[in-house]
Length: 249
Image (tube, rainbow, N blue to C red):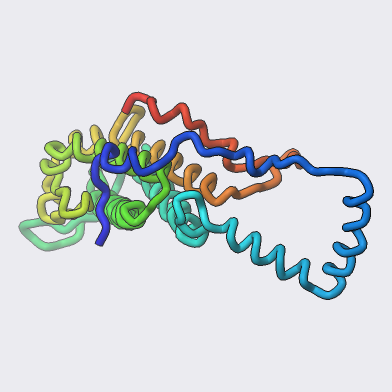
């Protein structure tokens, strides 16, 4: 199984200044171009042009790193899932005291109390850890520089929070994945959980940002093109700014 290592292990494998000049080759006009028009028309009619274009676009589905569009699309999906799970985990309502039903430890009867909904918090954390682990595993298999870069920074931030994570029952296991000790989580200090998973500049906030960047990087690597809400045409590649490589972690 592939794992995410430090970014320096990957950096030299990729040419950060690819030559795109081949995409803008000059065309010649004149009689020869006009003469080729009939041949092109015949090619369209007999289907050979269609086959040629299908072969061309199939080739374009391979990125510069050799990673397939299907693989990158899955990476994007997992990154979006992580961002969604983190957003749910950071929801303020999850971390407010409310009326909940709990079993009385002495009588075993169910009573209504005002407290944190530990079951809801545990469920949100389960969803987060599952989404995080899927993305870590998928990006560990990636050959795309920008995806790897963001994933390495993401796991690095989690690693930097390992001591506090351990306090609340979340450990970092082989391959930089997370594992929850449910018994320890049930007894965790709610303030430690809030420090990790709520508010700006928390670990969760950082992971949300990185999940978004991994999603963008994966989409950009496929050369995805879409229409914006205003009807203008945009290329996902242009949305990824390579200068972010020097962004402070």
